[in-house]
Length: 230
Image (cartoon, rainbow, N blue to C red):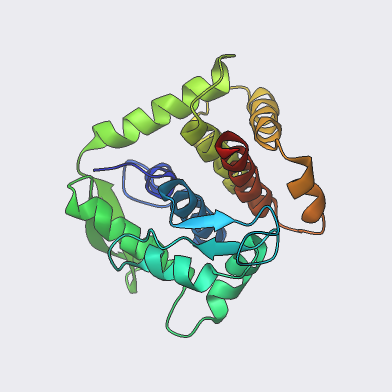
């Protein structure tokens, strides 16, 4: 299975018993940001950086390189003409579409590849919820090992890992994932990696009114992509 930022994020958001380690209302918006990043990395979405783009600077547009119909491809279509911040804030207002739909589609994908298994459970004897047990724990263990290395080693991690670590910083679950690490040092490292991705002063100044840290992660990744392509 091809790993993405969003699927890696979900693997880290559940413990070995299949239960969430973060509130779903916090997780779902960050999953939406992860899906936006993945769509950009796949080439399905791009951020306008100059006047030649079909949308205003700082807005997203679909490139026509969409994969077969999926929740993520629908996100790409609906994101066209929006800023990253607008996409995340509007998802809950789109008829027949929600961030939880994105998360469930990703979980179903992981299950289809034998990485996790859904289990129907009850809390307090009557509240039903889905647990996602690791079927192949080596996949999640590999993701966790990469994140640990990024947090504890001075070498520059892969861009995929840098983005994943940045999003984990928004979820504030590193104390659950790595209780043996000094969390003050972990937080300092996360901030260091986040700052290292924000390479475009023009993009930063164009979005300085953004009130969501998650959007800065998206813009940081897009800025790196625009720099590499130039």
